[in-house]
Length: 73
Image (cartoon, rainbow, N blue to C red; front, side, top):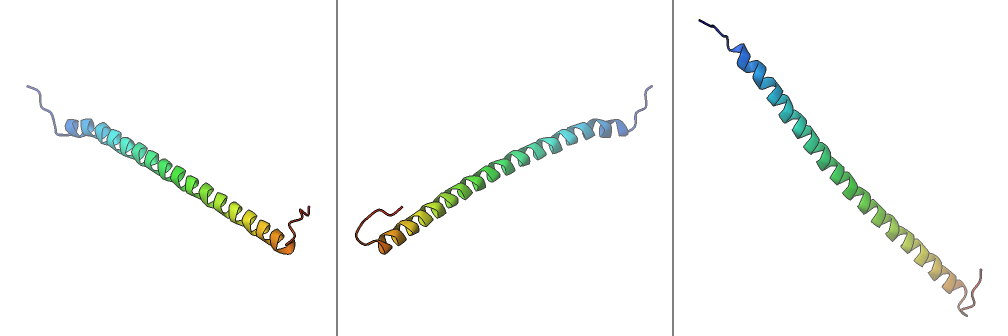
């Protein structure tokens, strides 16, 4: 006759729980990476808009200072 306690079932459950936690952490890491990439894309677009606006402002200032259309450099 073989007597077992309920501890064997708990020992078998812990690795499965750890695998689920690891899978959850990996999934969360991938999701956060995608969010970071999306944020970086938006930052680059914003920077491009700011550069274009600054160039436009400089061009407008140059045209206002030189109404004859002569290129001054």
